[in-house]
Length: 98
Image (cartoon, rainbow, N blue to C red; front, side, top):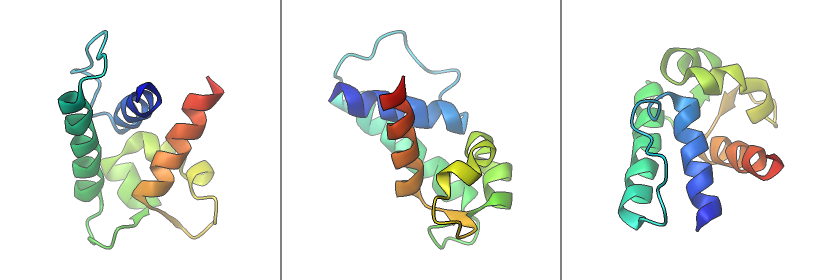
């Protein structure tokens, strides 16, 4: 549960949506975790202007700048786009490394 919370916090921090709303401690509040997950999904959906479930580098740059910054590392298949599960996996790997 704590690991998932850390991942969601990192994802939201990377997307920029979380910068002003992050409390010092979130505990294990399921409502807050669900809200953070929804914010991440919403940011992804807003950035995904073609609504195909894939962010191109340009879409990421316009809507999720931190994803754009790490685009090449997230796009492990070198497909030219990233998906929400790929972003989440990248954030999980980063959280585990720290």
